[in-house]
Length: 112
Length: 113
Image (tube, rainbow over all chains, first blue to last red):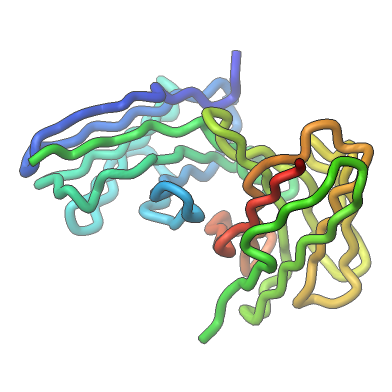
């Protein structure tokens, strides 16, 4: 089993809808979780970080973490065409010298 | 403006040639990383460095080498021993060893002909 798993998509949502992106992980000692957005041909940029169970909101983005069930999700409200990108889930495993492990990403398409 | 600069952005090389990718940061970050990205495979860690004159292998270090002679610089050499070097290479840094927010350069796309 991969350490970080994401559905590759594409996930297609209409403009204005809520996009829900999910990520599961296999390690039980991960402490920090991150969502990165990557446009085609560009480098990833950090969208959200979450460190404790529950929800964390930042504008149209909400990250949700459930350590007991080993999943982290990203909700994008009022989806816009500019949100069309690949979303990478990443986690930092305790005791690995601050290395991040990335999932393969979910491609999101927001349609007009 | 502070940031991470990678060069060159695009690079073509013949098979069997070594190539060095540059990564410079003026963010005063301690830790620096090199990742490789292939289509559909996400980011895989090649090498990382937490302090000057020290670096560690990541998950796919074979065929690569690095140096960290200055805090600002972390060049990556793709050697002829790397069997499939064509990829998108990303350099990243972060401010400290305990925080996880990684900042990326714009990437270098290497194509081996």
